[in-house]
Length: 357
Image 1 (tube, rainbow, N blue to C red):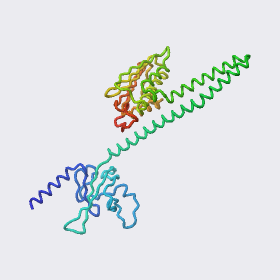
Image 2: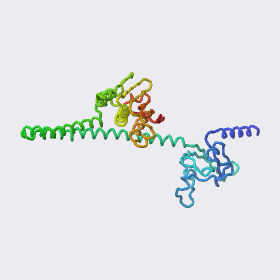
Image 3: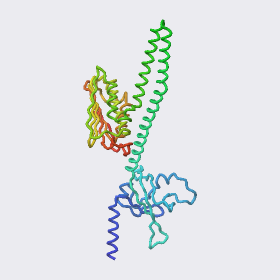
Image 4: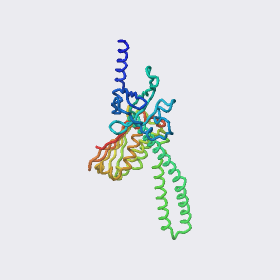
C-alpha cells in the first residue's frame, strides 16, 4: 500500500511539473483534476465547470449530439481552437483528448484534455504567411516591370524610331519646312531617349546578364553628371549569382536610395559601398539636405516601405540615419548566404525590422 501511495504521489508531481496543461473533467464538465500549467493558461481551478471552446459554442449540433467536438469524434484526438479563460477572454490552444475510465464506477468516463498555448505558433504562422505574401508581391512587381520594359522597347520605342525615319524623308522633300521638321524630330528623339531610359529603369537587363555590381555601376553612370559625383566601393569575396532574387532586392534598394538622394536631398556627392564576407552590408550615403525621418515617413512613405519590405526579404535590417543639413545614410545588413542563393530560398523576415536615427 505505501508503494502505491508513493507511485501516485510521484505521478501527481509529474503532472504538476508539465509545461502542458492537463484537465480532467467529468460528464458534466466539472474539473476533477487540473495541473498548475492548465490553471496558468486558463485560470480555471478544481471544481469549476469548464466552458466549451469557441468553436464548439458556435458549431451546429443535432439533438442528442455531444456539443464538444473532441468528445463526439472518436477519430479526432487533436484540435485547435480558442478556450475561454476564467478572466473572460480567450486563449488559442491546441487540445489533445483521451478518456479515463473508473475501476470502481463502470458508468464513469472522465475526459482528459491536454492543452498547449499556441499563441506564439499562430503568430509565427501569420508572420510566415505575411512575409511569403510580401515575397510573392515583390516577385510580381519584378515580372510586371519586365513586361512593361519589353512593351516599351518593342512597341513605343520602335514606333518612335519609325516616325524619326519618316521625318528624315519628309525633310529631304520639304527644305522650306526644314527648321520646323528638325524641331519635331528633336522632340521625337528626346521622347525615344526617355522611353529607353524608362525601359532600362523598369528592367535592368544588365543585372540579370552579368550581375549586381555591374548593374549598380551602370546605374551610377546614368546618374552621374558634372555637378553630381557618385562613387562605388566593392569588397566581396564572391560575386552574387546573376539571377539571384536577392540581387534584385539589393539593386532596387540602391536605386530607390539614389532616387531619394538626388530628387529630395539635392545631393552633389553620393557614396555607395557593398561589403560581403560573412554578412553583407550595403550603404548609400549622401551630402544632401537631410530630413527629419518621421516627417518624411508621413509624407512619402511608399519608397521607404518598399525598401523595408526588400530588406525583410533579404532576412536583413534597414537603418536610415539622417538630420536636416547633415545628409542621409541608408544601410542594409543581411546574411551573405542569402545573396548567393538562386533563387531566394530561405524563410526570410524572421528578424526583419527598420528604424530611424
